Length: 158
Image 1 (cartoon, rainbow, N blue to C red):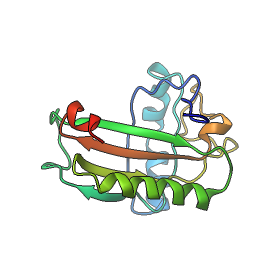
Image 2: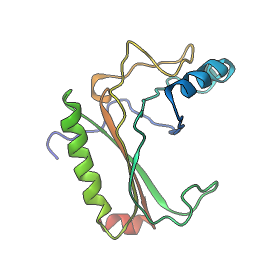
Image 3: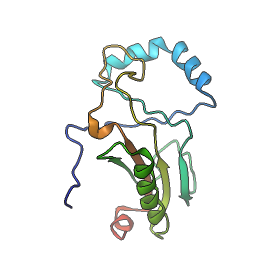
Image 4: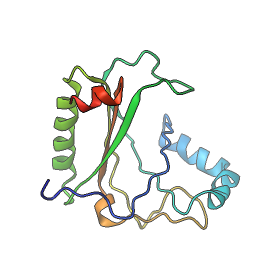
């Protein structure tokens, strides 16, 4: 589609979602984990931690086991979207409407929306040394729509 393109040089190897009850809990975690963060340089060229102080929103969840510890056979997609502007409320509203529309589809088993705060390159995160923590402008304000389908065939129906 016109105006829609993938993020350049964006090879995502995985994502981790860690939750904290308070900002102080997160600060305590960061302070207690220098060995963990120091080891990131042995695995990753870059890591970026977006803050979700208000958490994520689950719009629909028909997955039998919401926290599987193994392959549950579902077809999962994390759709990463970036804003072409700095209007946080407008971007959040637009992505929220998309996620809510997807949640009405019978083939969609789960829709979870992550709307993190804009990333600030002046305050890189996580505190891992010798690892890249900067994001280009198109990834400063992002949204992630976490989708699950019974199969790729079911996904193709949406």
